[in-house]
Picture 1 (tube, rainbow, N blue to C red):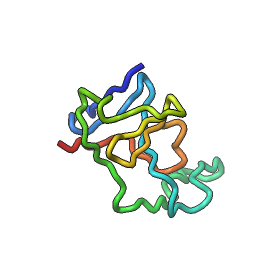
Picture 2 (cartoon, rainbow, N blue to C red):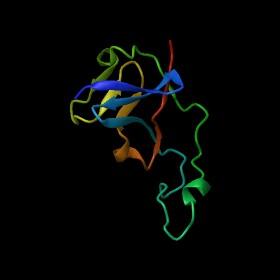
Picture 3 (cartoon, one colour):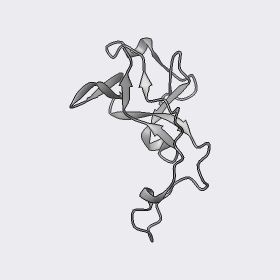
Length: 112
């Protein structure tokens, strides 16, 4: 498998990062979130919409990289083959299914 981008249909400067078929998301942590982290309560309707995520104003949604040469900007972790680090940024990319109970970024804006 290899790193690749999945561009938004309406804007090639908005994209997700994939490793083969696996969508990678930027782990943004749980700081300031109310405990417990958001889990759906089957007895409540649309409870994800009522949860206050306290999204910080400085949450990173921009990556500066060359979409045609991702391996120059994104490196695999030494410990986990499905964890990657964006060089020169403090961003850890992991499979979305592993981090969906914290803040995360899937679609990135390209900084040229």
